[in-house]
Length: 122
Image 1 (cartoon, helix red, strand yellow):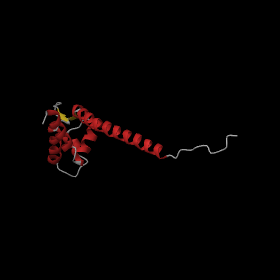
Image 2: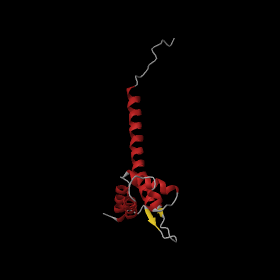
Image 3: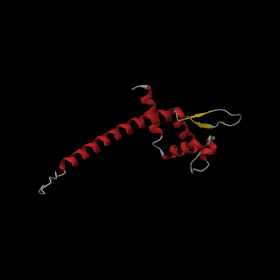
Image 4: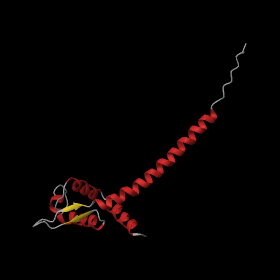
């Protein structure tokens, strides 16, 4: 398996968990420490830290050292990779639907009765 496939697998697996998706949504708004991320949840700081570690291993977030803080940041690179992957299959699906629409339109045209003018031309 190539590197980009592995990165996609890790990213999608990490985002399969609703808590991690919520953490990503919050980090999209602003950077936060693990303690700040843990505040709204009924779980230990250690549990939230494990969620952040999974996101970090998937390449979705990074942590930096800022004086006494260790803020967590969203990393857009893997999201770009995911978006390209999703977009590829969206385009393929749309193309299949366009071909189906065209086929159905041709079938409908073929089923239309032909009208001949039976009126007397005199």
